[in-house]
Length: 237
Image (cartoon, rainbow, N blue to C red; front, side, top):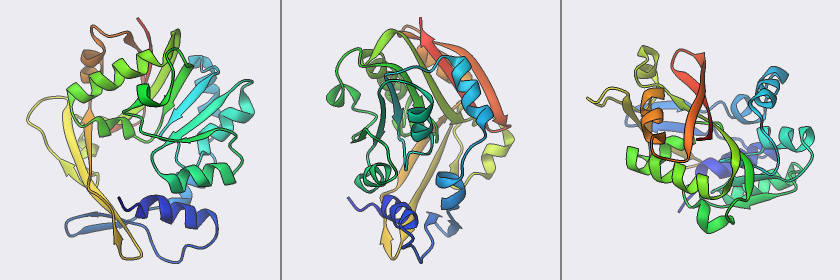
């Protein structure tokens, strides 16, 4: 599988990127704001809120990218912090940036990567949970996450809310007739290399609560930073 996305971001980190990283859906092309999305520091208030959520080590950042958040966790918390990403280029970049434990792996195959009860906290910021692609896939992800986390674990996940009008302006937006559900589909291009099409399932907080029903998890809190984007705090039921 080609990885123009990971390669472009790694090249940016090394000061070697001369071409844009494009997000593409048919005739629509948008240049990805790599620096702002992956390298600009987030406000301390973001991490103070996560402190209040009860993030603790051992902690895993799912889809950690170049380690913007997980490196802050490494400095902020005593104990082991792990960054997981499917891109070898991004895992390499995390290590170059000083993350002590960067692992190449699939967040939708957690049982294959980590032992039972491995983590006390999980964090996923970037809407990558939507790559579960279906409500069944979301439930399976939550079940796997429950296995690799302790009984007192907390998980903080984010998604776009397809019920928000602003979600329709997202690149690759696809409607769904079912309330609380939507799709995004697009791919990345860099230096002539075309990545695989990514299909994200967008789900509202109500759909997330439904997915948690009967699982080890419950939705404890939902907070919005934009009309179309929210973060959910999950705790073991």
